[in-house]
Amino acid sequence: MQTLALLSLGEESAEKFLWLPSLLSLGLGALHIWMLVHAVWRGNWLWLIPLLLAPGLGALLYFFAVFWQTPSGHGFELPGAADRRRIKQLRTQIHNVDKAVFHAQLGDIFFEQGKFAKAEECYRAALEREADDPDTQSHLGQSLLRQGKTTEALPLLRAVVEKDPRHEYGYTLMAYAEALTAAGQTAEARAAWEKVVAANTYARARVQLAALLIEQNQIPEAKALLDETITDAPHSPAFQRKRERVWVRKAKRLRRRI
Image (cartoon, rainbow, N blue to C red; front, side, top):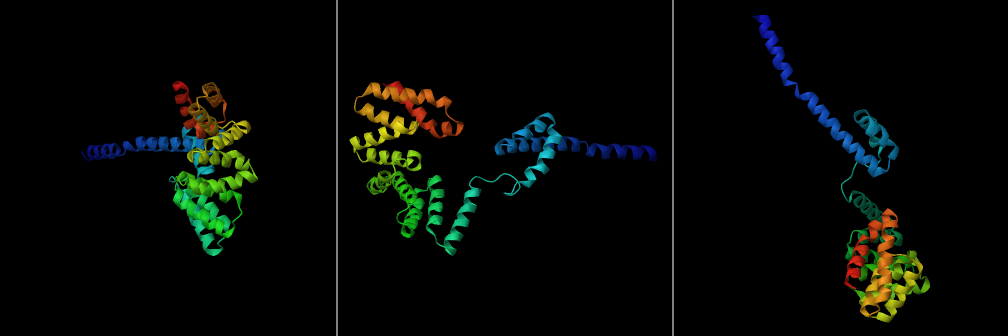
């Protein structure tokens, strides 16, 4: 009887731990997916071979060899975490040194986040310390433009493009053309757009020039620009396709209308 009782107790104990293999398997599967995503995200393409061929072992190897060695917190970050750290660093640098470059860099972060009023404050602070910096003038002009302050944006953007039409690979000239368009200065806007399109293949410029040409009833010229935009899009680098997809979609809508 005692033996039977011990056997029964052993069976009950074993049953209690039957879930352990399943739990370990689930955890290892989650780790594998996590490490696989991390490898793709970081561009660690060679590690895809062990991760795909030997999921469990590959995941463990990747975790200790790569993931655990990642400087920023040993893994993934919440969206905007890097920006928050950089903002804190820049504010500390401004407090200690107060250079124009730190104000301008802080403005660039806010601009990328779409916080144009905050960006404007930073750029103005930078210009107070270094009034003739073309990058800061351009970025201030663009932040003002995004807030609908076209009258204030125009002279800043004009000053930069008059000195260097190719400033920041033509992006300042595009912003200037947008400001002219918003101000209703159609002739000047068209001339600016044509300069951009002559030197670049930016969908943003082609589509907005095409829209202007449609308003002027110059349909064949507009069609040609839109067709070029749609045809070139699939052959652009991935980063450019991502950045310009909104303009490609707009090109397709405009093309259907004419």
